[in-house]
Image 1 (cartoon, rainbow, N blue to C red):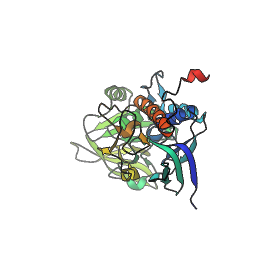
Image 2: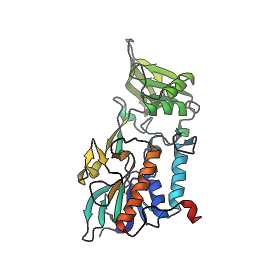
Image 3: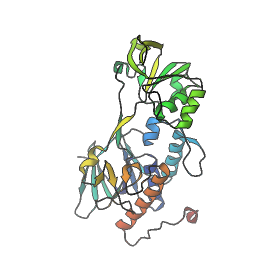
Image 4: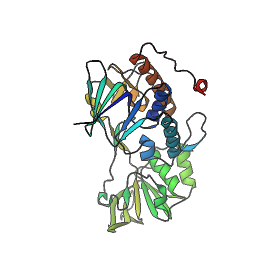
Amino acid sequence: MAETVTTDILIVGAGPTGLYGAYCAGFRGLGTVLVDALPQVGGQITALYPEKEIRDIAGIPASRGREVVATLKTQADSYGPVYLLGRQAVGLDRSADGRLRVTLSDATVIDAGAVVLTAGIGTFTPRTLPAGEEFLDRGLSYFVPDPTVYADRDVLVVGGGDSAVDWTLALHPIARSVTLVHRRSTFRAHAASVREVHECGATIVTGAQVAALLGNGRLREAHLRVDGEEQARVVKVDAVVAALGFISNLGPLLEWGIELDRRAIVVDTRMRTTLDRVYAAGDVTTYPGKIKLMSVGFGEVATAINNAAVAMDPGLSLFPGHSTDSA
């Protein structure tokens, strides 16, 4: 028989917003389960840019992504939430007493008083490099969880967005060489970062695409098709990081019957969705004037958790009190 886990709050998505939500729930004395399809907490930060400096959190001038995730998890762990990672929330049902029953991809059932969706952009898969896919995990990668593995290597970074520029800047002090290739003449990344990458000494090739990756078992060279050049330009590399963006998908959440607007979940001022006792917060949500920032998500999930608490027990105060009151 499938295992059933009973809790007060189920949070779907263990990224920064979900982790802070677990803290907010714990502060109110609510039991919390966090579910995430990824095998580790941190969401996009952990998967895409753990080494990138994050500078838009109030009171923290700059902190690497992995450090932000670590401190958020430490904060959440002070109240002992249960983490069910590497599994996806699939089905939603409701019992006779109004409690929610969410089935996970491994058949585990979560019996919860309320559900808070903090799924970010949902599950995301990388846009693949048109050539050289056969070298995946043998020199080609789409994620860089540990930059130190590129020490003393010749690295080719492909892309023109923030991720490509960020990885170029992060790897340049570590690698033997870094070449950044972009198919257009201008970059989509933040202007200050683009200026920094021009100044750091990395080789930049614009108007170019990867035509082929070659090697004997392991990657050895990349052939670039450069605008205005008749012959392919050969670059000696032993690692390629393809930062071409990602395709996001809310997956089974699309089948729950929640009102959506352009694949984002519609919420009201209490962060309620159109389903009773199902709330949402963070990048997954939309409403007039919505701004997708981590700091906004923190406020939204605090609103969601406290309104969920009152929905489960109308005798409770909406205001949770100040953390200093319990010190």
